[in-house]
Length: 309
Image (cartoon, rainbow, N blue to C red; front, side, top):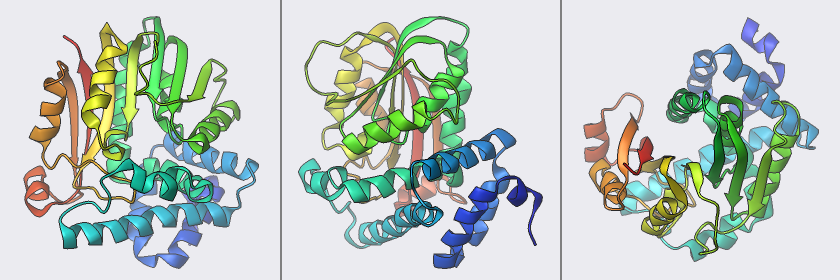
């Protein structure tokens, strides 16, 4: 039986139907995920899929992108359970495999965009981000900078919910840069002409304007030197700036390199680099407590708002 939500968002349902053909065990998860989204969120998913279609991606390709993320995650979780560590620890090991692999990266970015709405841990962190950045809407700030905008979902929410004179995104992947540029310029989500997305290495010691707000969504787990990124975040922000970041613990993926192991280890990384934790969002695996996840080495997703004082 076709539900009213399927009639309203037909492209979304087409993608879901194709995903379930390959992974029927995902039916309960996807049905619950869709029903837990509000009207605006469901419309954003539909608009995201419409955007991808205008980019020349078939519905089958979009579904394939999501199943790629599911399949790779299952495989890496199995490896992690067996070996007790992530498969890779060096960026050089995944650079060609993932970031410079255009075909893989294209599917990867599309799939990650859908997980922002269909994975409950990602949904909770996205909502945490939006709820807090709205505090910046009443004041005019100079520069919003995002490191690793990836699929552009966080960047999109920042431009919809904040008030900054300039918005800058920095990503090392050319595929990510192009996808984010096209997403923001598509018109499906509004007028985001103030966005400036560049391909660059955030760690390069070049002179940068100091940011009022810095975002690093799902960056730390992808690097072998998280301490350098936190130091660079401190050095490239104003004294009054806020920093938002998300990362994860015991959450293997094909390109995840850094695993802090515990909440305490991760938060020590921030405080050792002179940041103050202002807000936190800890999201254990569904049905498990934080303590159970640490003991059983199950995934925990986390989001933080940091400041310098």
